Image (cartoon, rainbow, N blue to C red; front, top):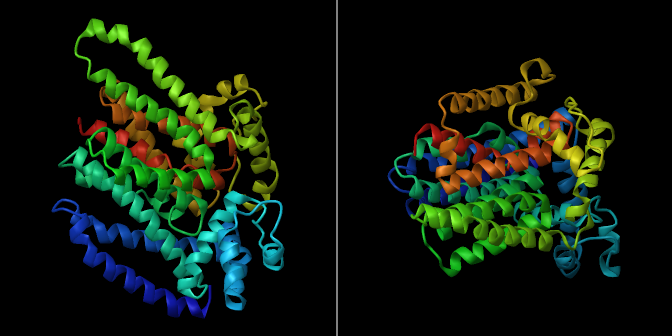
Length: 432
């Protein structure tokens, strides 16, 4: 970040704030209006602070690699030849570069990784409006993340009225989600898309708003997540099947009929979920169901002892390395879920960021224990949406806990499930 950031970024801060002020009446009501601008500004602060952290604390990292060693070359291509720039934007990346873009694509660090290159392309698109200014471009990412979270929050407020403050805490104001989900990172894009996807599903399943708009938003959001982090969908889709299963089960009032139809619904939604997972993972060997256990073992080792230990060294944790088998993963699942939900503990803190994460995790642990002590855990399964939130949180916590083995990386990877986990805790506390 340099002088250009001090000139261009304030312009976009003012521009986005003015636009938000004028659209606020159309996307808020009397209960949610007061949270709109503060939630947006919190995202802006998170995006800028993330850049400061990576520049002055880490001395580089993913967010600057996407920009300095990625979108920079697409931006320069546009400066020299618009046609070449457009081709780079439309290119999906991979092992083979196009002849006409070779001079640029070979300089892009993430070109061979289509998922990372998708973020590079999105960064380059925003760079065209910000004159390749890091912090101003990061504001565009923050806006997208905010849009998805606000859409999710708004529709939840319609589903659970008179709880706007608690819902805002869960969806809009979790500190780690704001910080790690606002800058130029994969996590920002997938978080915003996940919010929009949840918006479309709540409107479709619970609010009966079954229009083309919901379908279109779901498809676009699905495609964005699929392009960047397929494993989010692998955790998300089965829990949507659980949500639908429990929603349909609740409609059956007759107890005897309900008992008879449970096996049929289990088979129906189980097969649907499994088929969806097969379709998601069929074109990528890394995410094929039969390969997931081995993939978890390789990723865990790389992050704990390889590149992650060198580049993200914020303190490793040890729950026992996966052995590449499903039996081994199941054996480690309680420890993996625990580390994602409730660690680092205070005695594991190694730096200020870990201290903040420890405070946050301790709060989560307190409310979860309170939920168990008050004997309200069972009530989760009386609300299909809360069952979905709980299931997705546990499955995703297991997925990142079993494959990360580094607190610095875990703090970032786990943000997609945190709003759902806190929603489950808060809405249960409110006895909804």
